[in-house]
Length: 330
Image (cartoon, rainbow, N blue to C red; front, top):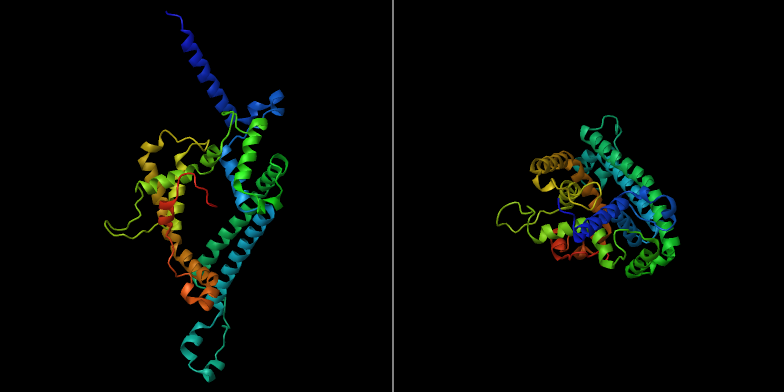
């Protein structure tokens, strides 16, 4: 048996070191002991840099908490108003009996038997969106710890306070993260981080979506030859759940080897999302219709010509014009 050549041994040692570094990045517990004081490796750099960017984009902890609390209040108000308009208002009297001022004066605005026997549609509507509101509330408390950790990272590692985020640019944040890599070693696979590396990790899934749209691989046209895009937020969510989330393995940054061959799995996920969307579509349509008019009521009243019905880029057009590694705030 021939002895191994020095070049072959050198290559095998290099491969062993690269594999060891990758395992250390995937499992920070390997960094315990004397190395813990020198190395501050992040187990999942993709999600970490996303949280760093979202914290910057939403301008700090106070703005994030205020925005989410307002969203919870708006959702609760819209749900309550929907139930009130559907059950409490005397629509039959207002539509059929209210002809002039004298007849409208005798019509009761509210029903006497309101909420005594609500319709099944209203019961399901309240059940669906109450569960959704509770899920958002739990998600709000679940994210508090991660938000506090990111605030601590900005304050103690990047030396950026929340008040500075209102005026500081993203380039400044990236530059300080790159400088931090030289001392704290956030990533142990590479000695140096660049702005391209950070943007690529933040927008890993979005870059795949840009490629799919540019290569015209998404079935967004209902009929062949009909120039009508049906790419909506619901379809975008379904593609993200069925395609992009299932594409990567547990690490979050490597494509599963069996993904390209698991056609039946993709079909099952798409069918499940389609069935769920079809079941919830009546409730979502009613909610979004009311929310749309509440959101743009002032525009309809003050500026009808420049209202929400004015022309704008579609979601498909925005994805077509988007470049790789183009952050949303740009």
